[in-house]
Length: 388
Image (cartoon, rainbow, N blue to C red; front, top):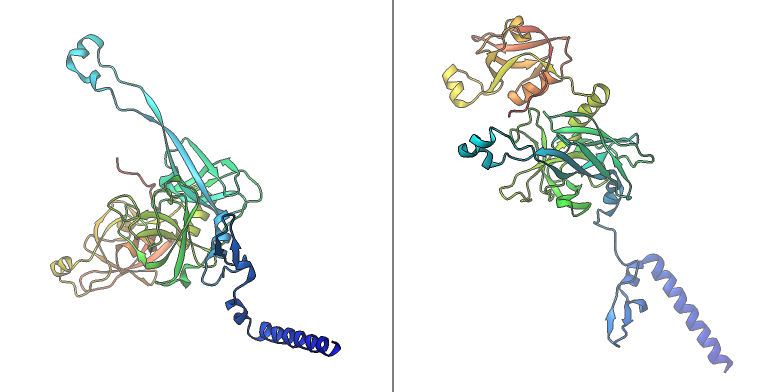
């Protein structure tokens, strides 16, 4: 009996030693083995297989990026008073004879929704201008359940950005990323409140960089992504796999109004300059030279006898403006600003906008096969007026 007990003890010892060696050197072997906790018997006496509680792998998951960025994204609800259309009966000539030329004064509250991103723990929130445009009331809902009233600090219709502020403490500000480090094919997450269903995270890749000529905005440099973006996502965050902010979702290309896999975001490089200017000045200050530029097309190149397809043709010069005073003329081709080559009108507008009003800048043009350099006193870009 003693001999059998000794043999049993030795067997147990060897078994534990083997288990320890496998657990240390080849733990994945143990994961392949069925766990006793995986077998579950229901009340109906049907046995099913269930994964262990810690069996969900975080590998290839973006849960950490989402967890880091989601608290910084807020839901924005706006409303405004809108006048209803006139009663068509009041336009009837017969009724006018009795009641005179009266107008209906009925109004209604119109509401809309969007998203925003907390960029400072001091309460500053970045969103789209079209989300808060003309709003009488702005309500902000945080992911932790808190709510606050938003106040517009300033807007920039030319980039479709706006800064609002709320008065709350312990706000989870997002970390700004670097768009210089991103490339086509990088994975990104879009966070917002699509169709008002609640905060949602979608995933995609960067489809293209530097997209322009897509909206009515004067300054465009969009990040294109196929992450699902729908109405309500406007003003929400586009983040990288580390949860850092890369852009503000602003527009989609769609014939139905829903996502078809083509969304556009304003890059963080634009965001930082606009946000800083709005917070400091209440509006964005940009340079201006007073010209009407036009892209060089093959037809224009042939008409002017040009040998190049880069630069911006000056189609018009505002009389008395900075360019006019410096001697710029219609037909000149603007090819460089402060030594930086101008490829097209979009780049020209961006380079001029970065110049500080009141300073002088050297601008090179092509005129009659010559390349004179003009010294222009930079003016302040007039306030944007939306076409009626």
